[in-house]
Image (cartoon, rainbow, N blue to C red; front, side, top):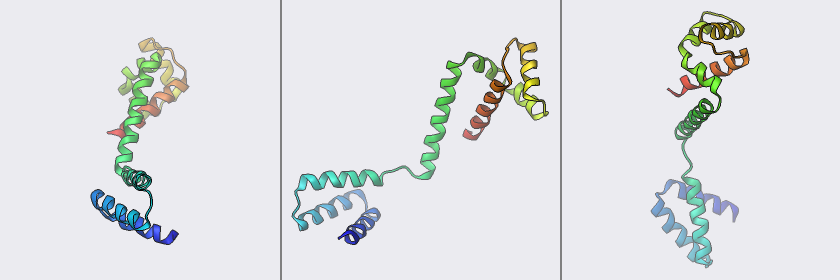
Length: 133
């Protein structure tokens, strides 16, 4: 019985949604099950078929990351201030300056006093942001 159900599921994956519904109704009538229970099972199965592809799930994940970034920008004002100077921070980082040194420069030049951990967080965000593009 289990193998038969698995083979039917495989057949239905290859069919269109309308064909799959018709096929499922035909199976249900042949087993003489209650139709309303079968339709619920069919809908659950068809919903499982409509899972996003890997490409779509990557896009969804990227959107979630972007939303998290925007939320953090609003939430943490120091990070928001640092993100104004993102090009400068990236430049210093690419030049090989330490995170502490970058934090000192930000404090001196832009009056944004932050710790090196905050600079690290901002660099991580910028790295994730560049992956989205």
